[in-house]
Image (tube, rainbow, N blue to C red; front, side, top):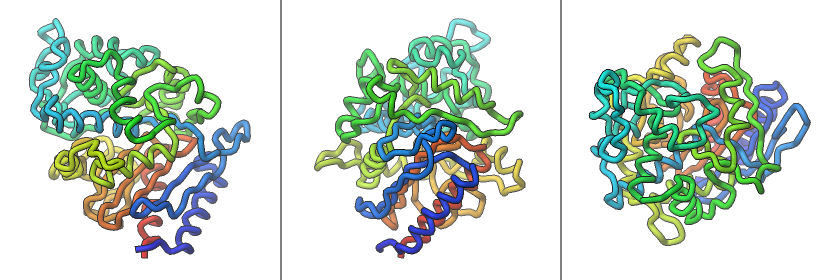
Length: 384
């Protein structure tokens, strides 16, 4: 099924219109089928304020798309017998239980499956027990989480976790593999095997001149203020280890990661992740549960509320008509990950299509859902 070149040009024109309208500043995009790139485009600005143009090798702070890399480490641990979905957090991180009996309630029930499916019952906060100036030291984050309550029964609801779940997942995989630093684990087990030479947890000094600064365009009074996100320009440092939000990457490297997933975990003839694990990771795990965060986002705009549509860490395509990142025309079984108001990749396994979109300029999340629904639909419509 090749792409319609007129439809791909229409996609490029729409992206340029969005940038001209000030919806976001710039973007790097890749659209491919069967691993063959049909469109690799660079548009607009890496930093509009200084008129710095986007470049294909721009390094983005990819925000919560980071979680996809942390998930991949968990998939390896599952396939290699290091962890099980039923492994409780306290089985690996005993100090998570804390020392105050009034904060221990339900903490002994939270397991890896709960964390991956955003059903842990932990607070939906971007601050994992301490402020952003302390995010970069994973050991400090884990220590702080010992005093954070589980506020809902684990498994009882889907409430997207911006930070806590993946801080815990990152620490769990670090400990079971015996690494001193989480960033080294990710580099050796995911990034190097995939040839993701411009990807890291943290921002290496040699890539700082290519880094796209985070600039946030959201209204005051929302879920997050601009400074809540823009502060990551300062705190995603060379040594920072934030398994939930702290990775830096390029569109080309994210494409390599997505392609590994499209090939069911295979890279260069080697099986990096077991197909059986990916089969479950890309299957619906949250049933008819609603997605609390995006129910709020959609309700604010008068839209139908979405179901959770979460696998083991992946966002999945929705069979319904509620607005969502993939649009209503990706095939059943499509999956991917995204970052707040700015980044997305998805794989459509039926049409064999991969879509990567890394943008400068963080949008309001409702507008971001509308943007990605529109562009994802245009990509799907370009397949003939």
